[in-house]
Every structure is written in C-alpha cells, then in structure tokens.
Length: 427
Image (tube, rainbow, N blue to C red):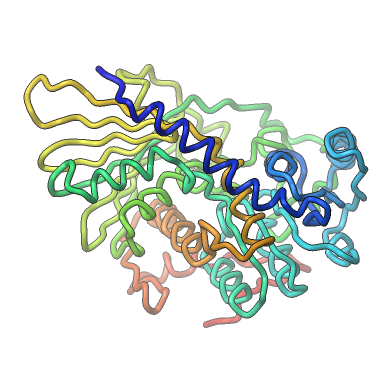
C-alpha cells in the first residue's frame, strides 16, 4: 500500500481553504454576526465553538430545556469570547431578542422544524443540524418557508467539505474506475447503551418540553441526553442519524436525485432490550443510474477490515474507490495491484461553519442548500419507512409521494402531540 503526494497537497489545500474562507469573515470582526444557539447539550456547542474559531461571530444567547446545560454553555462561551450570552429556556424568547442575526439549531430532530420555521419567519439566518426534519412533511414545510424568506440557510451536512470525497468524485468522474456500477455505504460501530429503566428525569431537565411534538415517553438515560439517536421517536436510528452523512455524500458526489424504489430489511437482534431501531440493517435505494446500498451493524462484531467500517465503496468495471472523511483509496482492477491511498485531512465542521458565516457576511453560496438537505433526509426516512412497513416503497419525486402503499404513505407525516401543531399544510 502506498500513500501518494496528494497527502501533502490535500493538507495544504485544506489549510488554505479554511484560512481563505475564515479570512472573509474575520475581516468584519468589528461587527460580528450575532448568533443565538438553540440546544446546547452537544452539537449546538460544537457548532458555536466552530463559529468562534472561524471568527467574525459572537454568541449572544443560548437556549436549552436543561438548566445545567444552559449554565455550562454560558460559562464556557464567556471564557471563549469574553462576554456572557443571555440564557433562555424558551426559544421564542431567544428569537425575540433585538439585534439577533442568526441562530444555530443543535437540538434533537423532533425539535428542528418548529424553531427553524419561527426563525426564518423573522428573517434570521439559520444553521440547522442534520437531519433536516423528523418526518418528510416537516422537511417540505421547512423548504417552502425558507424559499419564501430572505434567510441564509445551511444544514449541517459537514461531509460536503470533505476533500477526500471531492477528490474521489473528480477521479470517478474522469473515468478512473471505468463505468460506475454500484455504490455501497456503511458505518459499523459498537453502540453503547445506558440504563433503560423508566425513572424520574434529572431535576434540571424539563422532560415534557424536551420530548416536544413527539410522544411523551417515560424518561430513561437510554433515550435522554446524547442517547436519543437510536430511539425511534427522536433520532429514528442509525441510518437517519449517522448514515445520512454518507447518503448525502453519495448524492453530492454523483449528483443524484431521489431514489425511485426503496427496500430495507434487518432487525434488532442483539440490542433488542435497549434500542427501538434496527441494530442490523440493509437498505437498497434504486436510482435510474445505479443502486446505492446501505449497511450497518451496531452490536460489536469484530471486523475483518476495520479501516472500512465508516465509508463508501464505489464499484466500477475498471477499479474500486473506497472513500471516507479524510482519506480515499483506489483499488485498480489489475491482479495484485497496489492500493493507492490518498490522505486528505480537513476540519469539516470548521469549514462548514465558515461557509455559512461567509454566506451570511458576504453572500457566498452555502454548500448545503436546504433543497439538497431535504432530498438526503427524505431518502433515509424512506429507507426507514420501507423497513418499518416491510414493504417496497416506490417514490414519485415530482409528486413527493409514495405510490400505491397506504401504510407507507401514512408514515410521511407524524401526528404531533397536543398542543403542538404540525407545520405541513399540504394534502
């Protein structure tokens, strides 16, 4: 196995790209973009710190339904930027602040749509973590609202900044592996679990509000902070939560629309007493151009080739490319040919946040427009619908509906819990 000179070139390119974009924003640091962060228990703070690292931004407010999260975030941000952000437990109050320019939404997915819609209605710029929405119809309402507004919207598909993915895309487009026949994406890992016993939530946490428009579940640590990703009613499982990054990357690299036919099979074989989504899954997405296959295992198998646990295989008739966040490898067709490894390091979160701030400050194009985020989000949601209904899902992209499958169609929109109202007003 050999490493090419692209390792040096990619490193230099990553540094230059980050500095160039950050420089555009830093140039106006005397008038920073004033940002409020909704959801500061995890990725909201990751994104907030990235914004401060890029420069030209100040976090002026934070919002969370856990008072311990609020205090810890305010303390940390005060140390980082020298000023203490205001603290709110209600996102409406944060959005009503005078002189607010933008918001970061770092909540679990059941709380993406409503704050997003309220923010764009006020004309605020929005950086929202992935997935775009919990259900397909929420996503459509968000796209429509964004189009009607003047807001800059960036969705947190940070792997769109991956130099490895961009280099691999160009290599494939130039015929490097011949005719591309199939794509396989996968992320295998050992999912940690916590106590599933129903119990009182922490005193600092408003659990009813945390559950939001989704069902009010009995609290347990397994579905609370940082553990909600494999819960069906919030994170909706590994494909929707983490796999979505690679699905979006495949769509970006190959300029794919939505799939026309989706099937999925698997189950919860090992973690059935701990999680409510599949720990083993294969989903098949059929495009006119080629099939894209997703696979995951979460239950701790020892892998034959752990270096491919997280990434995408592009199979061509003249070779194969394997691409992951910061590295891609070409496997030539020739017998006993050496693998060509190309290192491509980059700070994906920093670059994605810098792109957002550049768009806010200077009118640059965002790298993840909301329409593309909608397609990638809907694609994985359709995969879960196929799994949950044990049926073939035929997707009519023009009509944005599932064809001749009432049970699957019913899952395009989740009924909200009272008093919340679902924002989708279509049929």
